[in-house]
Length: 142
Ligand SMILES: Nc1ncnc2c1ncn2[C@@H]1O[C@H](COP(=O)(O)OP(=O)(O)OP(=O)(O)O)[C@@H](O)[C@H]1O
Ligand SMILES: [Mg+2]
Image (cartoon, rainbow, N blue to C red; front, side):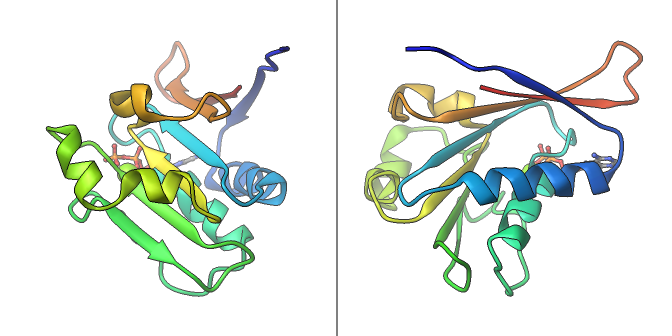
């Protein structure tokens, strides 16, 4: 299997929106997008961009405290997770994490590296980092 890696420089939120548009456009039922990166690097911003490009009309908020926000008004159902505060896998099983992963919607998971072992091999991994100067955001998709 070939692994493709693509790097994007996200200087502005506009560039993040564009990338979100591309990811949303390519998304198929059952896909999983894993967002990885430090506090404040732009995971939620990218998730919102994906939601907007799916045509979701609801207000998209960060699921930091709720674990999951679910949206049904777009081209695909969107299951937006933030697993930062998950301490035990049981918390995920209780909300039906596996069912969402195997479902017909698109799962977008912030802090996905924390639950890596639970994610399918076809997961699209999106890493957000800061450049060497700490001012610009870099994104790799693989
Ligand atoms: N490409 C970008 N260019 C400029 N500012 C950005 C960009 N992406 C995000 N931001 C800004 O950075 C801040 C943090 O973004 P965001 O909440 O998306 O980060 P996060 O990775 O989800 O953080 P957390 O780890 O706390 O969930 C926001 O104020 C957002 O507007
Ligand atoms: Mg966030």
